[in-house]
Amino acid sequence: MLTKYQTNTSFLSNELANYHNKQNFTTAFQLGSKYQDFSLYVNDDIKRDFLNLSSQYFKEAKRLLKKEKNLNKTVFRQRLKLFKIQEDVILGKTQKALNALDKLDRSKIEKINTSFFNFLTYSCYVLNGDAKSANKLKGKLTERELKKVGLFQK
Image (cartoon, rainbow, N blue to C red; front, side):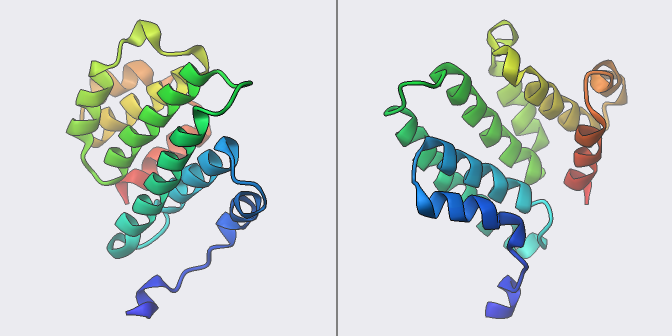
């Protein structure tokens, strides 16, 4: 049973240490993000477990965001929604993710979140085999984002 969880978590060490030292919105948000990214590299049989950890830290971040005074809460609430949508993409639920993206008002996507929104939309198109729609967005993505789409496909 425990051998299934034998994995090198050094990828998470900075965020874990930061969260341990100071539990606030930023550290919870960063740890949730890191766990979600890490889920792309683990075997499918434990992927859901890492995504559940990610969700717990994002819920904590959402709760702590209410206490923050110096952050743009709209930006971060929106970003948390996008991370929830990304979880569906990671799990292969691309149509559900695309439906959630379509429900968002594109004109109200905060500028800082636009690239994440575009990345998720592009990823869904690619994973759904919609090359025509994907090509319309491809030029808006960075090389790093294009490579990350490949991680969704493994």
